[in-house]
Length: 486
Ligand code: CS2
Image (cartoon, rainbow, N blue to C red; front, side):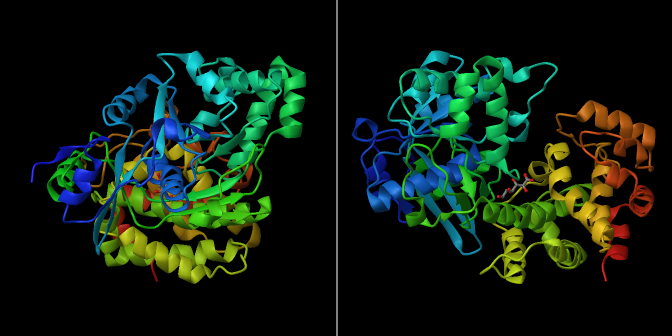
């Protein structure tokens, strides 16, 4: 069966021709719907998460006011713009598990604006009365506001666009849209609010006061493992499902979203499609803590040591009995005792589910993806557990081993001496310090933006780090690891 190019005309043919399972949108698109959500940063994660929840709202509940207009702000978004533009903004989410694969053609992204072509069109879209929510997946560095360079003062950044559009809405007497961060950060909503308010205060205090009073920035915990799409994923999609898609997304079946019920201008009935909409921001914070420290922390424990040991994929690391024991013991003995109890959540079950998700052999989650931009991850996923363990006198040896593996990883050479690429916005500074420090962590620990005095000043911690670094340098990860497993 020759594959059919994904577009509106071919949809039904694709569904009927495929003997395997392909789900296609049953809803109308284009002018038949309103675009209530403008999303900045259309990458794999957005397309496998928010856009899928909205697809379900449209498919199963006939919601037509909240289709998505995707926005690319950066020149590097040109490829996504072209890919989606060439196929009526349809794309396929390929869900994979050991049980098999399932293809879901998603139509909730109704249009796409590429800001480098027309900045004003983006601002006008956000300011449009039909827009109720502007959502973001701009990665952690997208929120970084530099007081010295006034980086965010340029209208090229996300916050420049949000500001310009909110300013228009203010003048037109509209309500502000909700700014909904879907980035994997603790207090993502509160950080967004703080950034936008301080940006606005410098320019127009009245507008800033209006945002403070009327704006909404819900905090949220987002979760779905979404590997990078490979060339092979496209071929397999064409061969097995008869779909020619310029840029499909691969993901696991699991997905979760816990969001605070704080909206400035209405919202879709997210709870109908499995989203946990909670009244209290504090609850979201606790879910986030569980997720960032257990899921992402364990990903770090798999990623840095795993890559040093020569593995390529997450599930391969999990197949190694000592590694999987290490990950389990780190979660159970070091991370879990520090976490708050959440009513209705059984942490042990959560940990078991994580082990299963990490072991999914079908998604082929690449370790370099997990290891990307560590300077934004380890300080969020690993260091807070260590700092709290120091505070309460709990164990933290395994967490230190992970941090030590990252310090070693910064040099970009694995245990067999093979070089690999380290991708990090702070690469130069990190590598210079790693080189100077050798197996002594103190050089790297001087980086104020990443590590606090509570860590730097704790002798036991520094000693643990040093021991792990010396051993990894001398013997490699696989020989050192058994010493961290009981
Ligand atoms: C990963 C996350 O990049 C990483 O560090 O741990 O992308 C992870 O897959 C997601 O947060 C899962 O929700």
